[in-house]
Every structure is written in structure tokens, then in C-alpha cells.
Length: 269
Length: 371
Image (cartoon, rainbow over the protein chains, first blue to last red):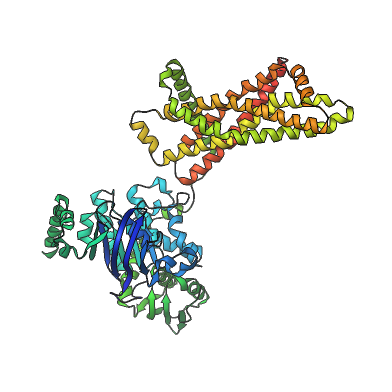
């Protein structure tokens, strides 16, 4: 739903969150604010607790201490039974799609509409068809089962399911991991175009440095269980923090940066 | 779902007036209103959306539908007052719906492909035969070269499917022995032939019932587990990993389970025989005044060894049926999670079916030979 809240109001507030699994400390005093209209990326090395943070925001895991508010609601209250209204306002795309394997692509995308609205089947079908077209899947893929789809198509289908209710907020867990560079770049474009068309706020967990440069408005880098830095890619690439420097100025980071600069130049001319 | 009272559509003159939030929660109501609406008679219609406060994809779709409806009635439609923030969305929905209507294939996408049951069945027979052949060859190779047998994996199966199944098999056959003796006691007392309870319990249990009960129990307990384990390994690509490491899945997964069950099932049957007869013995002494000593005396002369041996001889065959059907169904799992459940069920049903069919054949054959 575009323009239900003015740009810049906080959608997610993470305050002083700490997480421990037994003796292993995953987060220590993590605080973040994600605003309406942003493409906010949570970045960081493997095992730094990115996905755990995402799960905590979604209310799937409870942090050991601290609070997380999603649309002003404590994520601990985000239970299926009483969170009802909130669940219609965000969509989640899981890392491996998490499509229901017993349903066709079209039925998968239709699930939220069937569960949460009283629309007639014909209208549901039309909306689903538009969403399938929006994520760039061919119409004849609608009847296929998830195991008949390629990895890239499965991601797109998962994205279509995440946006079928026209949510204000979309979570993407490593959307481009394991995709070839052309499809990954296409996915970035897709996220950007959906953001402009549907007025989405996007929260994304990714390692993909190219996506970071291309679509992020702000990035939080996690490491050692803490937030090492939050800011635009330009700001972070100037950072003195050794871990951030290594992350962005390693060989891959430099290549992605150069590519981003080159794209800007091309766009400028 | 609460319906926003502000959201409406009405016709006045040649203007279609749209108001309120054209979003998912109001769409059902709006759709009904549109159906009841009488479109203006004029040939030029203005669609005024200036008072639409919110619009999502569904809303844009509905607006598009109104336009299409009017165009089909050969009216010129113009949309007035569309807010710039919705314009992008409406444009995209227009583009996508046109795109979609260009391809008739999209309708087919909603229908499931027709069942090709005959072809699937013949395919299934061929696959089953291929599996049986492959396994037979592997078994032959293992018997010729016993060092190929994976003893550790086999012992694990013996523990899980044999040792841990002892309490439940024991309890069940004990109860079956009790039931048979009880039912027999009624009839035998009428004729005063109490001592024949020994023949009844001994022969029926040793020869037929104990092997069958054990086989059915193990089919439900272990056959299903084989199908689910192998199927899950297939879904998670572990089977492919095993193949690429140069290990035969049949050698790794099927043979240890088959050998272990062939070893375990006769042992479980002996154990079940003992507990079943003990159950019958308790009832015989309680209901028919046949003491334990009398029972065992009679047992010695009435129940020939061949009854025990026929029962035990069937057990390894039951074991092969259960292990192969379970493993085969596991390998048949293709797609996703629901396939695992389906094939697990099939494995249990098929193995119990085949066990009983085999048992029936055995009964016929042994009676021909007067055994």
C-alpha cells in the first residue's frame, strides 16, 4: 500500500538486542532503526548472526534480551494467533524459497490471498497472474510445481508470494545467493522496480557486494556480534574499522566498487 | 473483515465516481458493487478516481477491469484525477494484463496435467524390476566377497529394528496367544477336550500367527522408516553425493538393511513364539485347568518340529520383502516433502500386502506337500 506512512518513519526498531545460544554469543547489544522507504541491507561475514537477527525481527526466534518493534509492535507478540493484522503488512522471501512443494507456483502465490482475504477466486487468479508477471516469470510456469522450477525461478516465485498482498515491508534473505551474475543483476533490478511501483520498504540480508552497491540505501555491517557500522555504501567504504575495510576492500569488494563507479559514470554520460 | 464505509463506486450522468481505499480488504465489496452498477448510457464515460485515497495492485486491477468492461461496450473511457503516486502502478497493471491476455497458455497453468496412470504403472513395473535386478546383483557380489558387507551399518540396523522392537513384539504376540487360547477355550470345554488347547495355540502360533504378526509389525515400524530415511536423503541430495563419491547407494543403504532384517526377523519370530505360547499357557491353566507341566508334556508330542521350522523359514522371505519394498519406495521419492509421506504410506501398505500374499502361497504349497 503506497503512501500509508510518510517516508522516513521507523518501520523496525531493534534496541539493545543480545542473543545467546547456550554459551555461544550471537549478538551483543545490537541496535538498529529501519525507516519507511529504505532498501536496508544487513551485511557481514558468515556466522555473524545476520539470519538470526532477521528471524528475531520476524518473531521466529526470541532474543535473550532487548526489544524489537515491527510497525511499533513488539516482535514477541508477533504470534500467528494475535499478530494477524501485522502479518498482512509484510512479506518474507526465504533463502531457499520455502515454496510449498505440494502446490503449483500459482497456488503458492495465491496462499496469502486465500487465507487473509475474502476475494473471489477469479480476482485472486487475476492478481496472482499479475504478480507472476511482475516478478518476470513466464505465464506458463504458473502450473508448475516447485521441483520443476530452476533455482532462479523459485526465488522469483517466492518473491511473488511475498508481495502478493501488496505489503509495506518485504524481507529478503540472501535473494541472490547462488544465482548467476546476470540473473542476480536482474533480481536487483526487479527489487528496485517493485520498490518504486509498490512503495516497498525492503530489508535484505546479503553477501552480494554488487547488490550492496546497486540497490542499498543504507547498510548495517554485523561482526563480532555487534553492529560495526551503519550508513550508505559510500560512508562505509570510508570506514576505518578493520573488519569493514576487509569486507569492502578485499579483492571482490574492490571489483564490485569499481563496477559500481563505472555504472554511475555510464549513467552520468 | 471490516469494510471501509468511505470506499465506494457510483454512477452519476456519464461520470463513474470512485472513492476511498481501493485495497485488498475492500476489493470483495467493491467487486460486488461494480456488478450491481448500471453503466452510463452516454458513449463517452469519465472515470473519476480523484477521491481514491489508497490503491494497491488489486485495486488497480479492478480499475482496469472497469475500463475494459466499458471499452467492450464500445464506449470511450477517460480516467480523471489519478494521483501521481498510483499512476505508476496502474500503468504497470495495464501493461501486464495486456501481456497476459496475449498468451492463452496462462489459463492452462491453473489446471493440473491429466493423469497418465497407465504409463505411470508400466514405468513403475519397469523401475521395480530394475531395482530388484540391481539389488540381486549387489547381494550376489556381497555374498561372494563378504568383506564388501558393511557390518557396522548392519549391526546398527539390528539394534534399531531388532533389539529395540523386542518389547512391542513380545507384548503383542503374548496378547495374541492369550486371545487365541480364550476363544479356543470356549469351544474345547463344550466337548471336554481341554488338552487340545495345546495343539490349537502351538500350531497356529508357531506356524502362522507369530511370523505374520512380527512381519506386519516390522513392516510398519522399520519398512516405513527405510522409505522415509532414503527419501529424505534423496530430497536433500545426499544420495547424489553418495553416488558422486563413488559409493553405490544400494550397497550403502539397501544391503545392510536387507541382511540385518533377514537375520533379525527369524530371531524375533522365535522370541514371539515363546511369548505367544506362554500367553496361551497362562489362559490354559486359568480357564481349562491344564497345568503348565501337562501343557508342556502335550506340547512335546502334539506340535511337530516342522511347524516351528515352517514358521521360521518364512521369516527371512518376509524380511526381504519388507526391506526391499521400503528401500524401493524410498528411492522412488522425487519431488518434495509431501512425496516422502506418500511413499512411506505406500511402502507399509505394499509390504504388508506382499507379506500376506506370500504367506497365503506358502500355506497352499505346504498343504499340497502334506507338511
